[in-house]
Image 1 (cartoon, helix red, strand yellow):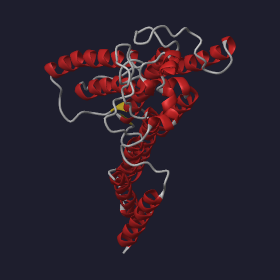
Image 2 (image 1 turned 30 degrees about the horizontal axis):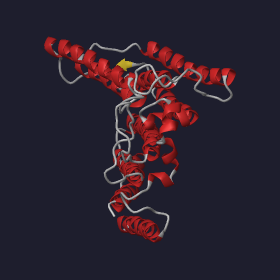
Image 3 (image 1 turned 60 degrees about the horizontal axis):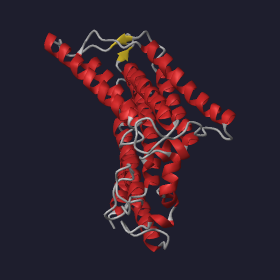
Image 4 (image 1 turned 90 degrees about the vertical axis):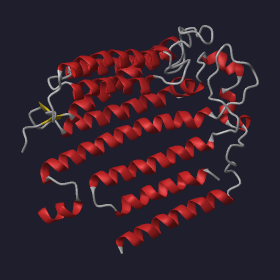
Length: 236
Length: 111
C-alpha cells in the first residue's frame, strides 16, 4: 500500500514536470539551442576570451566569472569534511584492518602506481585552464591515490595533520588572492596579473593559481574524509 | 525528447527515496535523483555538432560550441553532491555503530 502511494506520487510529479516542460515555449528543443541568444554567447566571444585568457571556457566561468561562488562551494566541501571528522571524532582512532595480508609485490606495486596517479593528477590540475579537468577532478585523483595506499598496505596511515595544514593554507591563500584583487584592483578576486597569450601554460593570470589551490584543498579534504572512514573506534 | 529520460531517472530516485527502508538504499536513491538532474541540466546546453567549449590558439574560427554555463553549474553541483553523500554515509556508519543494522524497521524494534 505504501509502495503504491509512493509510486503514484512520483509518477504524478514526473507527469507534471514533463507536461509543464512540453507546453512551455521557453524550454528549448533538444540540441537546437542558439548559443548567441544566451549568456554563454558572450563568454564564447573572441574578445572576451582574449580578456579572460583561459582557453577552457568552463574554467573561465568556474574560477573567473564565478570565482566567489567557487569559494562558497569549497567552503561547503570543507564544512562536510568537518562534519564527518566531528561524527567520527568521539572514539579512539584505529586503522581499519584488511581481510587479507598484503604481500611484498602488492605493497611495492601500489607505491609505483601511487606516483603515476599523483603525477597525472598534478598534470590535470596545472592544465585546468587549457584542457578538460582542473582543480576538482585533480584533487579527487590525489585522494584516490591515498585510498589506493590504504587498501594495499595494512600498515599505512596518512599524515592527517599535514593534510589539515595544507587545507588551511590553500583555503587562506584563495581568500588572500581575492583580497589582493580588492586592494590592487577594484573588486574581490579581480584578475590583477597580466593574462599573457592564450594557450600557454603560464597565462590567464590568477586562474591557474587559484585552480591549483583548489586542487590542493580538495585533495587534502577528500583524503581526510577517506582517512576518517577507514579508521574506526575500539569496537563497541 | 531525450531530456525526459533524465526526468524519468529523477522520478525513479524519488520513488526509491519514498519506499526504501534501508539507509544505504535511501542514499543511493538520493544519488540517482541527483544524477537525473545533472543530466537534465547538461542536456539544456547541448547543441548538435557542437564541440567542447575549449578554445586554443590553433583552433580555427567558426566552430560551434556547446553551452559552457550548464557544465560549470553541474561541476559545482557534483562537488556539493560528493560532500552531502559523504556526510550521509558518515551518519549511516555512526547509526550502524549504535544499532548494528541499516534497516529502519529493525531499528524501530530495538527502540
